[in-house]
Amino acid sequence: MSSRMTSAQLSALYDAENQWAADDDFFLALVNERPDSRVLDLGCGTGRITLAVAAAGHAVVGIDPNPGSLAAARQKPGAEGVTWLDGTSAAIPRDAAFDVAIMTAHVAQAIYDDGNWSRTLADINRALVPGGRLAFDSRDPAARAWEHWTPAKTRRRCALPDGTALETWMECDPRPGGLVALTEHRVVDGSIDKPETSVLAFRTEDQLRHDLASAGFTVDHVCGGWAGEDVGSGQGELIVLARKPR
Image 1 (cartoon, one colour):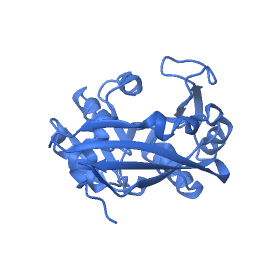
Image 2 (cartoon, helix red, strand yellow):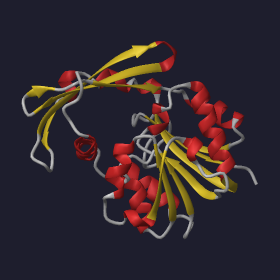
Image 3 (cartoon, one colour):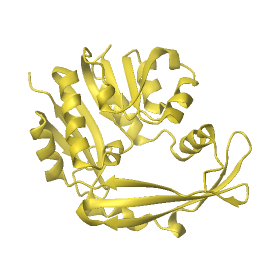
């Protein structure tokens, strides 16, 4: 069974389910600490934070492996101010030099294969200038967020801009090695759609610190919430601020 939804509808659903929030404020404020920065947004999706960073006066490259998401991003106001690239970290231009790299919306967890994760960090490190910063978020496995990803707790109804009526819900399947398979179920205009499954990696703070050190980064800070709370404070986040040494 193939999905009844178009790539444009899937992007519109993503935008409906992911509105601007405290995490976006955090990353935008971080980038704005240095005016006129050269910014890499890796895993930019439909461009929510990417476009905001560009509107704040920075030179931005947004990279994502989903062509549908990039197509939606390119159609939004201000999109002409961003360089959009289709792909993973391997698509980072070899001659690029960035002051800041961000991975938002827990995109780091979507890079669940350890080899791909190591290559991603190495690619980012190579593209940053000495002293350049890397910031990303990852859910703290100690908070066990997946226990809340049940049909009863995630069921939502919405209407897309084109009038399509949707009902969605989630279920998950914890796997060995800190992996969780997350499946989104959809009913589109009353008809059951093809479920979509993704795999997420839940890495501990110690794992993240080790991986960053192996890629040549210095970790400046790891906090547990968007207001700078300590890890384990109940916010369920691991927000990592790292730097390429000078």
